[in-house]
Length: 480
View 1 (cartoon, rainbow, N blue to C red):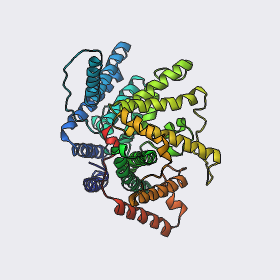
View 2 (view 1 turned 180 degrees about the horizontal axis):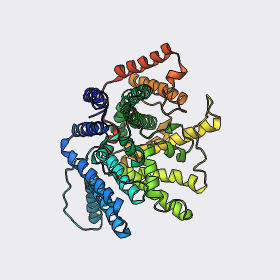
View 3 (view 1 turned 30 degrees about the vertical axis):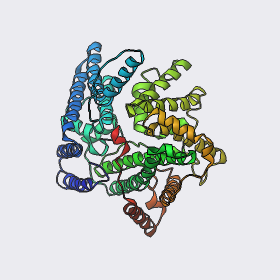
View 4 (view 1 turned 120 degrees about the horizontal axis):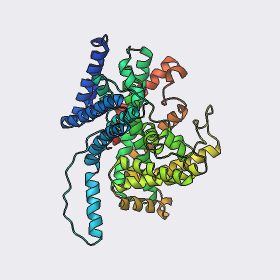
């Protein structure tokens, strides 16, 4: 079930009414209702994969209880291993089996051998990368004694499957989200209105910005051999806007929806395209995943405490794993490696924490230096996105080679659709820039403008959503 579908438009109000007006006096009943709703939400896509969701939930619930009472270090490690192997084993089979098999066959053939191996027609379960990491962090935190396991299976199962963030995050930590299932929740008017406002902005990002950019990006990337460098660069720009509008739009809808049920989810995006260097970009892009890798991979590997070689090794590992997390293709691994190359000079020169606050805070415009650094950072990100979007390494290299050729200085292919989408993107960037100091761009509209103006803003957004809602695109991160 998609947030931008008619199914969800019917599903959500029904769950909301039952939650606040039928089950509102019983916390356990509210949790049970959310659990049932979450299974319906996920099963709407393919009910067969509900068993995987239940398996991951059961394994980590059981492991958590045993870790709570087990003091023997060896047995505690064994229990944690059960969780890691179970979760990553499922993820590895469904997501990476064919990748490893195909590459093994190619390597064997390269060295003169012949081998016959059959790929499996495996469907990748939606959201498996997200809920796998969420349940895994629960077991790891209990192992580290940062968290006490819960005996309430319903509450834990609802934490794992909570439908607003189940299939594309944010990837929540049990230390933040799980305790909220044990606290009495009341419908707060201010929070509810703010949640609706964030949902509205998320839908605008997805339907108006991302989906329309996707149509042009798909057209250019799918026929990349027919275009010159300037048009291919334009296609990369459209994809960069698409993936940001799509994924951050999903996060806005997820966070806003959770607020309507009395929950607070972590922020997942903080205006990353206004970053002045790549370190700042990665503090602002997909925050829940970046911090997950920091806490559960980078720091356990030794972090930055073991000297220059340790810094380099650990950074490269994290970015390569991050790329591989996104997909079973060499394009994603190269995307991760390229970002590691961008990031390492800042880390090794101790400049990776130079830009901790939002750019031009309290000012209308950035300085010339800030602006130039934003443009450079965005351009580097744009080049990396080409590997992310291309279907093969060869295609990505071909596109980049053409971009850095003389054809870059020719006039790109324009159409009325291109001009309209560029105009919408320009409007979007202006609004995001004005609202960059907030949690999301239009958060303070009700404070900054009188009622007639803010309602004009809301109706304008709704109008644009209906006008430009055409060929709906699946949320990009559903495939990860």
